[in-house]
Length: 81
Image (spheres, rainbow, N blue to C red):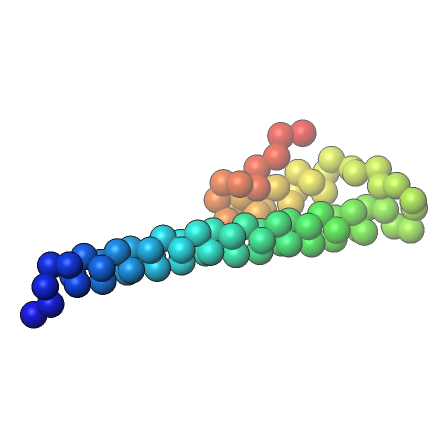
């Protein structure tokens, strides 16, 4: 059986690895969510612009998408207009 100092070293190394992995996971998830929201925004803008330079952003599309996405994925997609 490993001595106390060796056990402490192994514990410390494992703890550091877990903490680094958690931080990296948060960074990856944040990056994916930013990309996802960018793509969602892009789809909505392209649909609403219909070749115009600027979109009018009709409230109906945003409201319908908000309601449907909230039902499907729960909170985080509710928009008050």
